[in-house]
Image 1 (cartoon, rainbow, N blue to C red):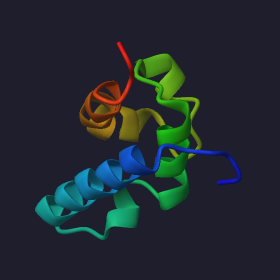
Image 2 (image 1 turned 90 degrees about the horizontal axis):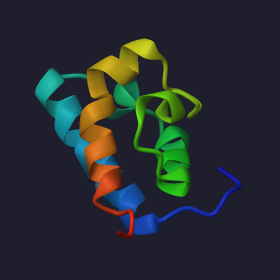
Image 3 (image 1 turned 45 degrees about the vertical axis):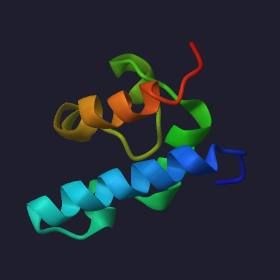
Image 4 (image 1 turned 30 degrees about the vertical axis):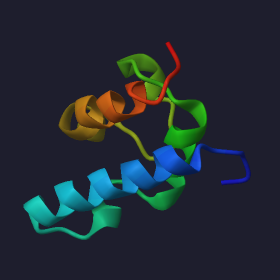
Length: 79
């Protein structure tokens, strides 16, 4: 969490996480931690192999949540 990250993207990822957590009736940290979301917002990785390099993302979370989080990240990458 020492790295600079896109605050707007982080906020959007937190909202996405909350929506998913509410639907699954689990606490938001069960989906991803804030530190993991900060790393996503800093690195803006949007393919499976690089997304797996994010701390807190394993194969299960990649297959369960990867597509929807990467889609949100992709919207924040300049064309």
